[in-house]
Image (cartoon, rainbow, N blue to C red; front, side, top):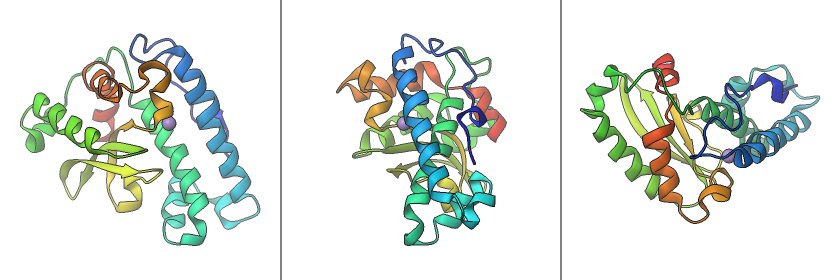
Length: 193
Ligand code: MN
């Protein structure tokens, strides 16, 4: 069984203001993430999945349509924990040099990430991933997740409306810009390389 305490926030809920408000994190962390955890616990109770790690649940449940609800909720738990860890207002490190091989410059990375984020239609996620030694930016729809596609996630941005609507309403592009220019936890990215 999973618990919200297994996925702690590493900062105070007002630590990302003015770019992401405490009000947004009160809902996003305490309500949205908590609900995915409750749903997942109810779905895996008394099944083989209750013995697995979160990553193993995601990989095993991604194989079969009959496990779609388990996949969606497990993946949303992983995605949210990964997203909250991807955020920091004052990252102590900057764009990792290792990424220059694939992106040439931090600005080029930002431009590419923005292009992919703005091209995502509906709810989903934008990721920096490592795949076969290469770094790339990919988008996933709804709950989908790179670890179900043999990719290693390094960074993610939540583009479900609930992640920005209280602060930005329809100004989704401003939320994407705030993330890229002020909120990336490069120390976390570095730790995932
Ligand atoms: Mn979310």
